[in-house]
Length: 142
Ligand code: AMP
View 1 (cartoon, rainbow, N blue to C red):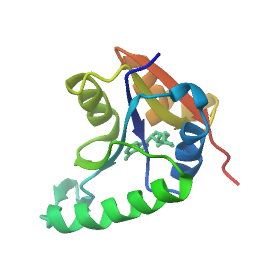
View 2 (view 1 turned 180 degrees about the vertical axis):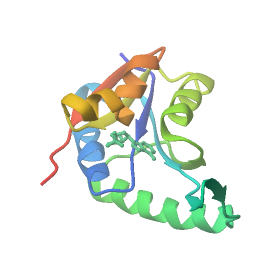
View 3 (view 1 turned 135 degrees about the vertical axis):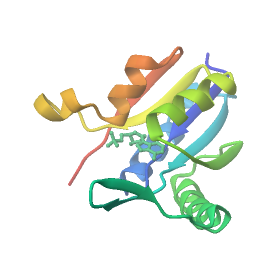
């Protein structure tokens, strides 16, 4: 069975669906579960330039962590830790998984087709580049 499971959650209500799915798996057993939200620095378009405004990361982190922890609690999942990391979602999820020695990554998937799939969703990016197993939870968009 899996020993370390990394659950990626975005900032939408779909995060609750992913967390509830993981919480319902009896086979997850004694695995160490971490919940990760990757916070992106919002780029600002200025003419042809993209600039990044300086933000107080610790304030943003505390705010986002509270939101994630509320969702985790409501789902009934009991992770070892919840954390916020700044970066780009796909790269950061993969880095955290490798550095932390996780053997399973869980993400939500919309099961998109066509152009959206070609452009690549987070689940798609993680699935194709991960060195460990990836579980995609089909989320409803209604
Ligand atoms: P998306 O492809 O962006 O619709 O997201 C699909 C799934 O990827 C989400 O349900 C999450 O499991 C994961 N994900 C997306 N964005 C993030 C993020 N910023 N941090 C962590 N996981 C994310």
